[in-house]
Image 1 (cartoon, rainbow, N blue to C red):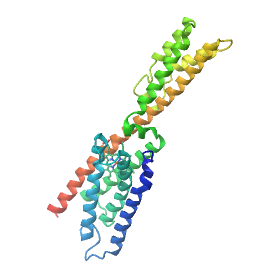
Image 2 (spheres, rainbow, N blue to C red):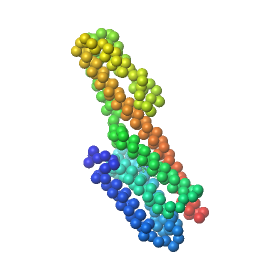
Image 3 (cartoon, helix red, strand yellow):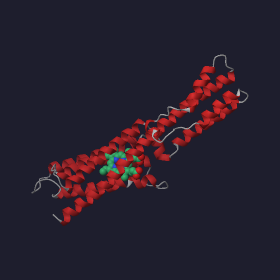
Image 4 (cartoon, rainbow, N blue to C red):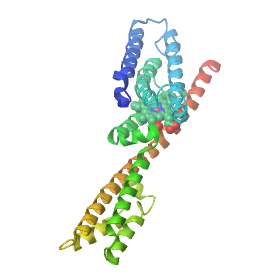
Length: 272
Ligand code: HEM
C-alpha cells in the first residue's frame, strides 16, 4: 500500500468518495423544486454553500498536514489523493450552489476564484505525474539527498581510479568534481548548464581514449556516469523549481479565495 500512486491511493478510494458526493449533490439538485429560483438562496443552496465552504477549509488544511511531520492523521499521500479528488468535486458543489447564475459581483468573484484554484491544482497534478520523483521529495524530502550521495560515491571512485595517472588527468577529475551543478539561479528553470565542468572532462577524456590505459578508460566510464547523474539532478531540480513556482500560484490564490468567500458570506447575511 505504501507504494500506491497518489491518484490511485487505496484502490482509488477518494475518487469513489468524490464521485458519490457529486452524484448525491446532482441528484438532490435535480429532485429539488424550490419556491424560488434555484441557487444559493434555497435550502439546498444553503446546504451546498456550507458544504463548499467546509470543503475549502479542509482543502486549505492540507498545507498544515503537509508540514506536520509527526502527525498520525493519515499519510500525506492519502491526504493528497483526497485533496485532489474532493478538490475536483468542489467544482460540482460550487456550480450547483450558484444555480448557474453568474454576474459581476462579489458572489461570482468567489466562484471564479474557486475554479481558478481548481484549475491551478490540475496543473500541479500534471507536474507531479510528469516527475514522480517529486512525490518522494514531498513525502520524505530525500530524493535530492540520494541523488547527491550517488554523485559523491562516483567522485570517490574517480579519485581512486585517477591515482597514478598524469597530473593533467588528475586536474580534469578535480575540475569535474568541483564544478557547479548550475552556474546561475535561472538555469534551474531550464535544467541546463551549458558550461558543465563534467561535460568538459568527459569530452577531454574521450579525445585521449585512443590507446589509453585500462585505468584511464575506467575513469572515462566513471566520468560518463557522473554526467548522467548530474543530468538527473538537473532535471529533478528543474521540476522542483516549477513546482515551487506553481505553489506560488496555488497557495496565494487559495488565500485570495478564502478572503473573497468571507466577503461573499458577510454580504449575504448582513447586506442581503
Ligand atoms: C478550492 C480548492 C483548493 C484549495 C483551497 C487548495 C489549497 C491547497 C493548499 C493550501 C495546499 C498546500 C500547499 C502548501 O502549503 O505547500 C495545496 C496543495 C496541493 N494542491 Fe490544492 N487546493 C485546492 C484544489 C486543488 C485541486 C482541485 C487540485 C488538483 C486537481 C489540487 C492539487 C494540489 C496539489 C498537487 C498540492 C500539493 C502540492 C505540494 O505540496 O507540493 N488542489 N492545495
